[in-house]
Each structure stands twice: as C-alpha cells, then as structure tokens.
Amino acid sequence: MKSINPATEEVIETHEEHDETTVDARLDAAWDRFESWRETPISRREKLLAAAADVLRENSDEYARLMTEEMGKPVEQAVSEVEKCAWVCDYYAEHAAEFLQDEHIGTVPGSKTYVSYEPIGPVLAVMPWNFPFWQVFRFAAPHITAGNVAVLKHAPNVFGCADAIASVFERAGYPDDVFTSLQIPAERVAGVIEDDRIRGVSLTGSTRAGRAVAETSGRELKPTVLELGGSDPFVVLDDAPLDATAKRAARARTQNNGQSCIAAKRFLVHEAVYDEFVERFTEEMRALTVGDPTDPETDVGPQARADLMETLHEQVAASVEAGATLRLGGEPLDRPGHYYPPTVLTDVPDDAPARTEELFGPVATVIEVEDESEAVRVANDTPYGLGASVWTADAERGEALTTKLTAGNVAVNHVVASDPRVPFSGTKDSGYGTELSRHGIREFVNTKTVWVEDAPADE
Image (cartoon, rainbow, N blue to C red; front, side, top):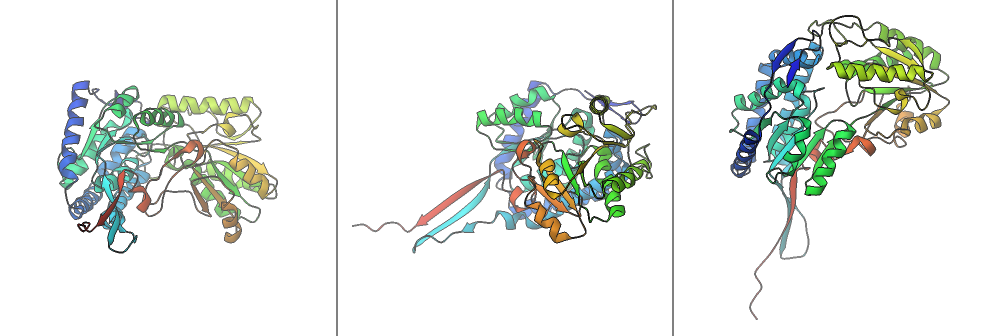
C-alpha cells in the first residue's frame, strides 16, 4: 500500500500490510490495556489529553507538512487542522469528568439511584483521508478519555499520518496500546469488527462504507457511529448581501480542495438575485489560486488521488452531457498532479449527477428557485442530510427556515462546521450517532443504572 504525493505523483512511502498475526497481537494488546486503562482515574486521563494538545501545538508544522504531502491539503489549512485537534483535546481535558459524572435520580425515600457512564472496551475507528488528523482526534479525544482504548484503521494513502498520530499519544506519555493502528485494506475491516475484542465502531466515510459497517456491526450487536456523505444545500434568499455571500460560498465549496462531507455543494438561489449571484460567485471561484499546496498563497490544491479526480470529472461530464451549463472549469488541469479546477455548473437537470450525487471536489451546482418553499423542497430532495446553510439579511427569517431543513447541522449566515462544543451528526443517508460535545462522549459507554436500598429487616 503506497502513499503518493497528489501534487507530484511521486511515491512517498510504501507500507506493508499487517498480516493476521500482527492484527491479532495488536487486538490482544488493546484488550489487555483496556483492563488497566479503565481503572486509571479520569483526572489522570484528562492530564494526558492536555499533554497531547501540547504535543500537537509544538509539532504543528511537522504534522501539517505531512498532511499536505500525503493528501494535498493546502498547508495553511493543514496548520489550522492541527490546531483544531489540539482544541478538541483541550476541550475534553477540561470537560470529560463533568460529562461522565454519575447522575443521581430521586426515586423513593430510603433508596439511592444513579446512572453511571462506564467504558465498553476497544473501539475501532475507520477513518478517511480528507481530514487525516481531525477525524481521528475528534473520535479519540473523547472516547479514550472516557476509558476506552482506540484501534485505528486509517485510509491507506495517509498511513504516515496514522503513525504520526500514534506518536502524539506516545510523546504525551500515554501507556502503550491505549491507541493503536492497523495497516489493513478495507476488505479486512469486517473481520476486525467481528472480533470479540472490538466492542464498538466509529466510521467516517461514504454511505456505501457505512452500510457495510452497519450490517456487520448490527449482526454482531455492536454500537456504531456513522458520519457519511453529504450534498449540503447553501440557500441564498432574496435579501442576502451578495458580495459577502458569494465570497463565503466559494470558500464553503473549495475548503480542503472541495473534499469535505460538509462542504456546500448545491447552491439554491432565489430567482430575484440568481443572475447577480451566479456572476459574483463565478468570479470568486475564478479568482482562487490553484497550485502547489505547500505554497501559503494556494487556495486549492490537488485532489487526493487520481481515481477521485477521474470520478469527479466523470460526474461533471455526465452532467454537462445531460444538459447542464458549464460556467467555469470542467477539465482536469494539464500539469503533473491530480488538479481539478474550481468549477461552476448551472441549469443542471434534476437527474444529472451534479444534483443527485455527492461531488467530492471543487465543483458547485447552482440552482435557481422561485421562493423559500421551493428552496426547502429542493434542499431536502436528496438522500443525504448532513449539513445545510441559509444566507439572508434577516437572521430571524433564516432561523425560521432551519426548522424545515432536514439535516443534522444547519447554519444561518455561517459556513457549516464541526465544533467540539456542539453535537455533530447526520440524518438519512448521512448516517447516525453523535460526535463531539457532551453527547458525543457518551456514544461508547455503558449507561448503567444503579439502585441501592438498605438491607431488608428480618421478620
């Protein structure tokens, strides 16, 4: 399994697949470590997590360069990703004990009743390449601090990031095997899920992968959290300030080279401002700098792999063939690396890929809508339900519209983003379960009711 620099197409490193003996040994070690880790005071676990935040900040340039080299993320965005990982560590280092403290419930006089939150064991994290540090830390920070141990199966093109993340925990002083990594391909994940030493599974990835993990986990009666794909609507109402909205729209579509589940993908624009928005938005997309992701001036780097760029282009070409108008971009760039330019499509038929599928790259589908009712109908006319945003000069008007949008995360005049302080989840084909906040840390715990009464008196 090879890590290939998507900007140069050069092989960075070849990673040997872990054989069954190695996987078995690592699962054994994880299970053994759980027995002692669960007994470690949570105050100690919080201190170690704070130390991990320090390690991340002290080595942020090193980790950012690695992400940029392995998957093409613009280096300034990579630095921000490392800082966000440190933030989620800080957050749970401060709040984990609070979120997991026993909850006392009044029942009847003379009895003591409470709920405790106890770790369940090793949890498998199947993580994607697009945010190779953040996706792992937003899983690991809460669940390791809750007393579980983490077993990571990362995407093969970012195995270098997996090794670096393991080193963060090592440098922070964690005991061996609290965090471990498996270098295996996707087809071997089911076997790991079926192993009795794995007690839960968290996956961030495609809907197809989510269905496969859910099927295996369900058969094994193991809890899962699935954060899957999205085709997020970006609703522009007739009173939206167009200059500012167009700028944010371009960023919302091209952040991380357009390779984000919560990137805005379908831009639903009120007919009264449609033509003006299309013009301004297209110019904002045109002004973005596409190039070397190690250059701080670069806005959009390469797609992470050749096959991903090819799939994206096939979707664009099929949409144009179906009748969509190509306003900008639409062809892979003629240079080394997997570069696809910022692309704008309008007049997209209802059944074209640009409206029915997730486009994982810097391609925007702009759709004209007659009014708010049509905007809601088109926004919800998708199998996905991850994020959505509404853009308007009247925040109350936008907030009223949020109740009608089917998504796990809805923002008004703000780009959809994950934040350690608030829950993050999807609905419909975008998955289920919660990450982050006080809710996320309780996904992989045993919620135990304890009822205590005095011994009954003898007759």
